[in-house]
Image: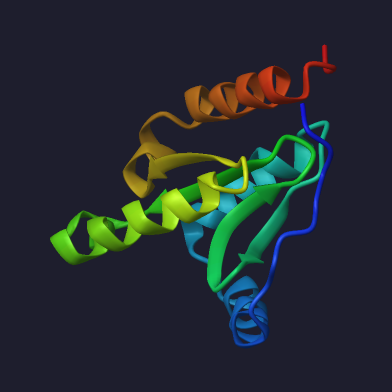
Length: 126
């Protein structure tokens, strides 16, 4: 696993990220408080990488988690997400995407999947 490294952050996006942290969705709150805060590695909410604001970021595992609402399934949004994912992956980040619907129907499986990826990417957790 590569060491954590500097990721560029757009100054305007940093301000927007602060607003988004204060106004997160129910699904983001659920994943944050009932799963990610309990993980053995640190996650950040609404983290800026270049001009993009990712829902959750774990620097130790180089892991990004995105929760997608229905707007992400429109053609324009899908193209934007694909480009965004390509940029994030260029930094060695793995992007995991889950739907808001999955948060309510498969929550335990999502938490297990995230933990599994953390273990694989850090190679040092039990």
